[in-house]
Image (cartoon, rainbow, N blue to C red; front, side):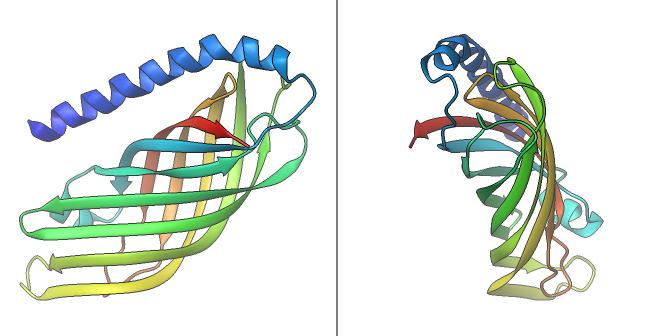
Length: 195
């Protein structure tokens, strides 16, 4: 029941941020016509592991949150560099898992700058930090590790207004102790600080 409430609370937060972003977008488009802006954004959502063993241990969805550095107001037709810092964390029945993939991505936005909604794509690669303590089902063997690995991702999404975006991303994470932590993310990002 507790996880059910968390998921609905997350959905409500996403809806509220989207409404706020749409209300602000017209004012911001007029204010800075012709200039791009880089934002630091906060994001939250769900991580859906693709590996059956990880789903059995932690459930079908795990909380993900993070930070994003991006110029979502940039011109369409140009590929630009962005950065993402994700924090995936799960805890269940004495098992715990934390992964922090950090990726540099190249992305492209489609549509015109003044459009209220614009689709985009991004592809990234980088590293990841793992900290987990898991008892493997079947064998009962306990694995506790803190280590670094590799990560890569492919993301599609929609930018709504100037500050809000929703996206779906496949996050590949290198295996550790034969655990495959890769999965899909469904995330909402709100750009909070402009620089």
